[in-house]
Image 1 (cartoon, rainbow, N blue to C red):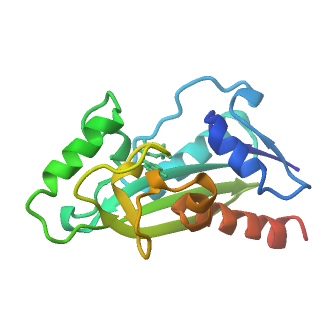
Image 2 (cartoon, rainbow, N blue to C red; image 1 turned 135 degrees about the horizontal axis):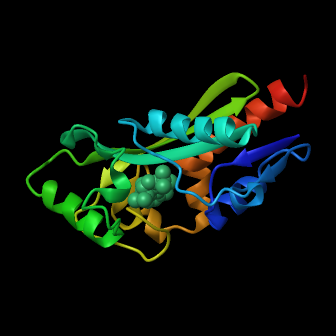
Length: 195
Ligand code: IMP
């Protein structure tokens, strides 16, 4: 079975490829000749993941899945959420995004937050969604050099360091994306490959 992962992010592709069951051949967007920007214009993380998966299915005809992730900060009404990549503007700069978030939380005592990843899977005419959540808090300042995005200011629950101070294996084992991928893989193993 062939399945498109709607990404050109080599890191994500490698991570998912290593977890996907043997009976499934994973294809990237470039593998199917898709070099265009896929629209992400929905108001929710769920909506954007579904929009990307639907776009590939309807324009290219492949069974596929797409992911979307956001950081939800409780005292900011779950912002930046779906706007996480462009919180401080369309230039999509992680340093600016983190600085804006720290400024917006300056007077807040509740710094609870969660990362949410949604994976939308389209197989034949069926649509499925898988969610992975990682709860934690936003630190007062940046710590650590690993990772990307908001990693230096996100401290997962029950850990005394930020994502940016963890090695990738640990982050993946407790993180939002890893959890969503595990749910997808378990579904593929039990419901699709065993049919
Ligand atoms: P995407 O949907 O995976 O492209 O994620 C959207 C935005 O959320 C990224 O541009 C990052 O700013 C942020 N983000 C997603 N995943 C992570 C993560 O694991 N750590 C830190 N930031 C993340």
